[in-house]
Amino acid sequence: MNILVLGSGGREHAIVCALAASPLAGSIFVAPGNGGEAPGARNVVLDALDAQAVVAFARSNDVELVVVGPEAPLVAGVADVVREAGILCFGPGASGARMEGSKQFSKEFMERHSIPTATFGAFTDVEDALTYLQKQSAPIVVKADGLAAGKGVTVAATLEEAEQAVRECFAGRFGEAGTTVVIEECMTGPECSLLVFTDGTRVLPMAPAQDHKRAGEGDTGPNTGGMGVYSPVPLVTDEEYALMLSYMERTVTGLAAEGIDYRGVLYGGFMLTPTGPRVLEFNARFGDPETQVLLPRLKSDLLEVMLAVARGDLSSVELEWDDGWAVSVVLASAGYPGDYEKGKPISGIEAAEAVAGVKVYHAGTKRAQDGTLVTNGGRVLNVTALGVSFAQARERAYEACGFISFEGAWYRRDIGARAL
Ligand code: AMP
Ligand code: GLY
Image (cartoon, rainbow, N blue to C red; front, side):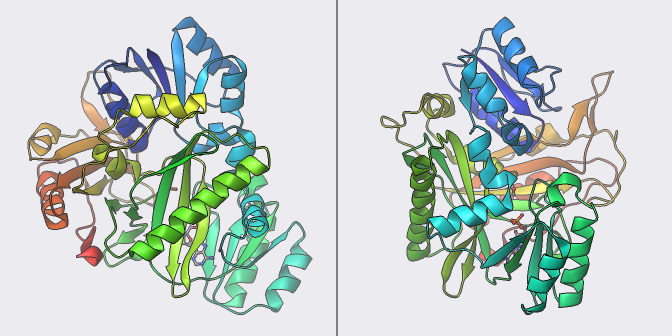
């Protein structure tokens, strides 16, 4: 069976590697992909946001399953068009993707379905937003409603800072995404994510994972797309896990009750507050870099799972997981998350993968004209290691990182330190 995967990050390389391991997989096309490789997979030039082009490519290449990695094509409704064309698609349609594409929609959804989250107000008028803000106390959180590549959230320490964030949002800092602004109570506690596969009614959970969003060690410095991740998460108690799962199930039941046929991954971002887990946000897709620690632990055939999701029938699927630990460390370019250069030759991946339990996923890489592997993004590689203990997985990941080099490469040395 031929498959088309949309996306270009470490998440997509991890998905492609897992799909390539399936005996059912034929050709795997990745649009646009990166420098990462997998047996039977090749990159193709295709605009993932152009639904008609995706359908045309799928038809002319006998693609039977389209897997949508990132949020933008989901929010744009690419999955709807693919399904209308009679092609199986892993990923929700535009109505389900609003859970990620509109913070106001997801907050109001949570309110309707009694899913614990921060109290909030949503505004389309700057004066209304500022009036609401004056009645709140700091710290407080200001969010652009729409997709802003992870940059639309300000956790403001003072009301002045919050006011400035509100004004900037309405002044167009995030374009269309900021024409509605959500102001939220600031919650406290450790964060963790719980991702589930869903066919629109049934829910099959993955293990919890914990991302490290800040650039600096000890969770300091600017926000990034994620500098490392591990799974499962020892600090999550059985009670907390059961609550998080029940909120995910309630969410899927709520989506179905509202007539939304959600087929794909639903990502719940949680804060473990002193009064229990509460939802920070939903994403309509696999997390990046969470996928790079979740899929390596999946022993079941990912293609069979994705097909069952896409067909809307997970009833006969059971997920089997490796019961070890997974840690993934992100190797980044000098200057990231600020400006950075591209095109630096990368070496040492083979030696890194010779370390037991290690797999290196490509994120910001590409093959240059002469075939050399070079950097092509801020987050370049995800070095994932499995181990029978958390300490072993961590040691293996860091040992492997030591073999890889490119000019300016850096990584956090404390990924998972807080779980030890
Ligand atoms: P989001 O894109 O909504 O996940 O927000 C990005 C990050 O901002 C989260 O991972 C949290 O660290 C922080 N954040 C978002 N909402 C809140 C909140 N209500 N209280 C505290 N921190 C928040
Ligand atoms: N790791 C956070 C995300 O994928 O949104």
